[in-house]
Length: 154
Image 1 (cartoon, one colour):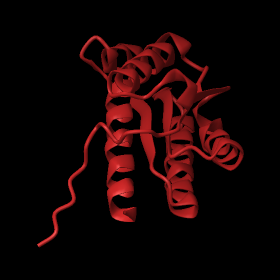
Image 2 (cartoon, helix red, strand yellow):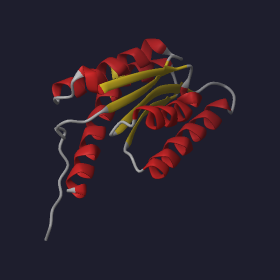
Image 3 (cartoon, helix red, strand yellow):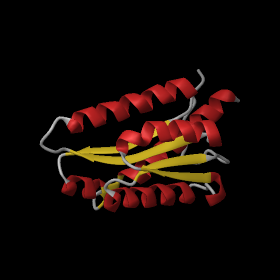
Image 4 (cartoon, helix red, strand yellow):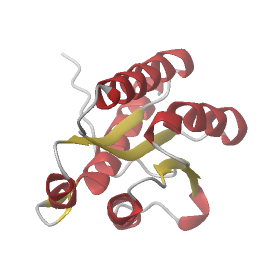
């Protein structure tokens, strides 16, 4: 039996990060968490490209452009959508989720989904640092998927 196991230390890898500027008091913390996780697992700054886009709805297009123009080994998508009193929340969440899923399959590249969908700002802040950092968690998940891809292609 062959067993292929993921690792957070894939070796040399080019990483893209797309981060929403909307709710930057949260997404900036998530970006910091992602960068810290990447650096602590051997990824060098020169191998990281960060793209800031207006909001979460724009993340899929920014990810696609990053993949097409920089050809990273994987991408981390970071954003936050906070529920309001209208159906807008559902539309944005669904569009971002479908967009990222389609890109994973279209480009055959791992994309870590670090887009928070919360009921309020307090929940988002908790997930951006007070009770863990979802940006760092997304970075670790991406590194594991890159390691799996590297092992399967050898």
